[in-house]
Length: 125
Image (cartoon, rainbow, N blue to C red; front, side, top):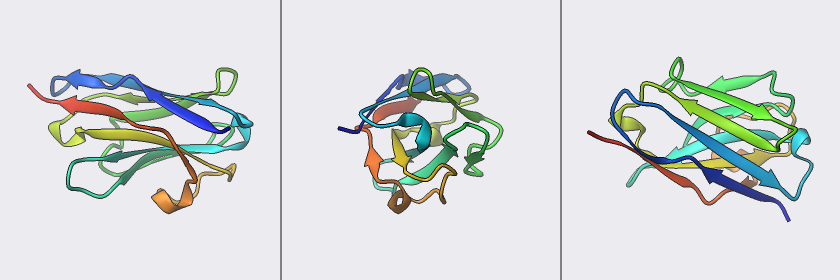
């Protein structure tokens, strides 16, 4: 059974950093591209970043470019999202999602078939 479990969320001050993890099980992890999405209250789910199955291709939303870094460790079946210079606007529930394509499809929720339960990130002073 395919499972994705996010961790690493929490409360951080503006300008601070967090690293999110997405642990995968139940499928051949290194065949799948993985993405991070986020959803703030009252807003649509937004694509944040994605990474190819090999880790060689990464994409970022304009709102996080230069601040967030996605990476993966296929030996540990885990994808990471390093978030630096956090802003209050980054506050949201963050989800990881998997796609059966080796290269990541466009960062739209419909392109990703498996989802984790989410982890809350709150940026506030």
